[in-house]
Image 1 (cartoon, helix red, strand yellow):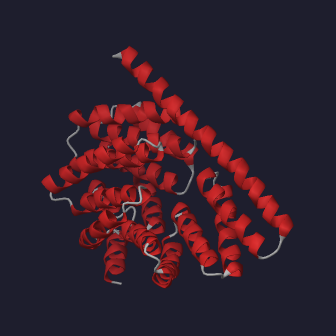
Image 2 (cartoon, rainbow, N blue to C red):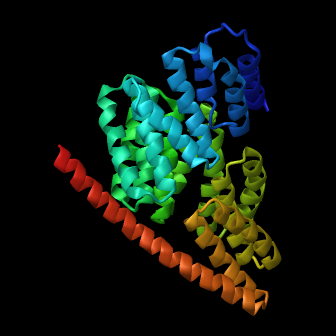
Image 3 (cartoon, rainbow, N blue to C red):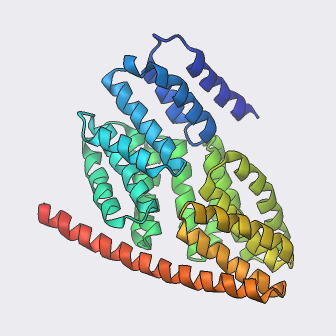
Length: 353
């Protein structure tokens, strides 16, 4: 509750402050809280929008950056792209251009435009030596981890996660340390290295609580449930996921909601609560299909296929199994496309250098 009061108080100050107050400071306040409350961040930016004509060039670039990030978190990719390209094509500093390339790369990646994603991500990494803002440098390293992990280049992902951890410790940045520990933990769990993950989990929790990073605390509870399931502690995992599901829905990020729903649906299936499994998996499938999230749609379809089989609904079981196979084939094609795009982008970039 205290975190919520601090956040809303900061945003309230931003909204009602005098028109001639320093907009840069207000924008930086919004930026520092941007992932803790998506709706409040968006509202604060809307409240400041009426003063855009009074912004300095630096304030305009920062506003565009924050608005683009908000659009991305709400799956409005074309709007995000418009603002980010505006920064890249302007006289913005290396800090803003590097951050813009990084966010744009993430947006293209989410849309399956992998060649464009790799090109912009390479440009973001190339900007780091020219940048002064330590947080923005760390943001690019953060995105590098997710970027390579999603592309199946796990060794690169772990390398950048380790770099991020070292960089954040050197700069005493608890928020970035939190992100780094989460990324390393996520990679370890994906590799089924549960003993290593179990040891790291408590360090990650401690660091993320100190950083007051709401998003990663929610992610960590999901990962804790994965570890519990690996050890056969299904009751503990169920309690963790059911409690976290409520908090995740309040937070409001569609991708995290779907991730949590799929975990919960799978767990309900394992404990024989097939009706609950169906109910939650349907939500995940519909939401992920709406946003074009192939990976989550595939995972939800898989749960539904086996759940309907247990419920003796043969037609629906076949329907979702066929959807699962179709989406699995699409995912394999996407994986091939990612690798091909990565190789093509590397060749183009080497030729230019």
